[in-house]
Length: 563
Length: 69
Image (cartoon, rainbow over all chains, first blue to last red; front, side):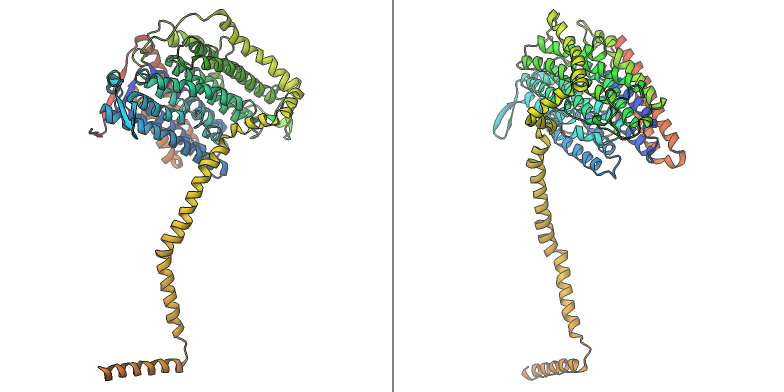
């Protein structure tokens, strides 16, 4: 098994995404972390993460991919818990690490199955055998399952963990405890897209399993609307963007599930620019408000921080899919791929794609209006709100260029009808359905996106009483969304409490009261007890010693007489 | 070029982690950032080349790991 640096078109795209966002985040961090006493450690972790991510995407075999996969997990853990004296950051880093391990187990099982049945872990050798193996089955716990489907399902479980898809998503919003540049680099643009990359890289396997593709499409579409529904009620600026990331990753997966891997990677590419822009913009806002993250405690500062405002606007427009900006090309292409697909969940994904595009627009504009417009709601003096320095704004400007032009410039190359760009990097068993979408669809998507702007303006700025009235009348539904569909509470009661209970039992009963009690503690106790008794004999009174001597002499003499 | 793209970040991380006392905070920030910016420029060149020619690049070097089936 060799270490490899393998660069095909898929890797080349990922190289640009990883290195360009990472470079801008490195520069941004010089300004953002200027008051932190541990700058070298931070920069070292960031660079380590970049190396691990590059190892992952340049791999030509599953083992190296797994090395990078675990490496980025480690770097993510170190960076989320960078401020390790903060308890919430520590808990979040452990949560991210543990939830990721659940997904990683899926990837490991897939790798074991591949090595057992294909006899190799090299991509080219595995993929060349995929067609021959597609009819084979494998026995697991008495049941017989299609081999490729089983492998793909486990691969996808790995992808779900890393890309924070529903059921394994809980770590991503908590990961916002880390410094904002980390959120932009790892939890928006690069590491979380590793799952999408894995599915695209393994397209020669996924193409032979319609079942696995259906699963990918269903989970992706469900995550897209689930995360969007939560983002709409959150008040923490970074958490809103984190749920938005979760939702956009769902879009990428359902595109992959439709067999449109190139569209998924195109959205990954454009999303990296505008999401990193939004995160770094949010960092600039947090900086301006001296570490305030609650959007309810902001407002009315667009004239005070005009550059940050303009750049956040560009990010928002690109994310929502405003015509001619990056998200417009990629998101439309995803919804159209669902429209043309004949897959089982195509209709489901299409409706969710449209609905989520609308919700995305609503929550994005809610963030903008509450952060920058309306009344100033902070206790800090208005005069103290200040614009960030050039070292933070220049990376934002460069990302804004990507958010504006990356869709327009690259859509022909990545998703054009007769593009030859992907070559053998992405495998299509059957040609994905192309065609000209109907006029109503072409009009509907931008209409939904644009109509959300005045609607949000009214709901979140001019007539907030409408929203308050709705919340008061639908309290259970509102709480359901605020509590994030009760996933954390559910996992807490099912897994965390029971495992903590088992852990406490093994600790208290097993370790303390059994092993320690009969082991080191027990021996020490007996020795101490005997020593105490022995020392109690040493009373210091002569008549005690004389009595003992007398008893001893009597016993010895008696013994000698009897013998 | 590919070696530089992959290993410059590792080198930057190593220098920043182990030599920060000798070279200072600001130098650490500049070195790590400069290495990644170099990687980003080289990556853009590779993407443009891939778009133009469609060629696949591959380097392998042995790390002595032998897997038997």
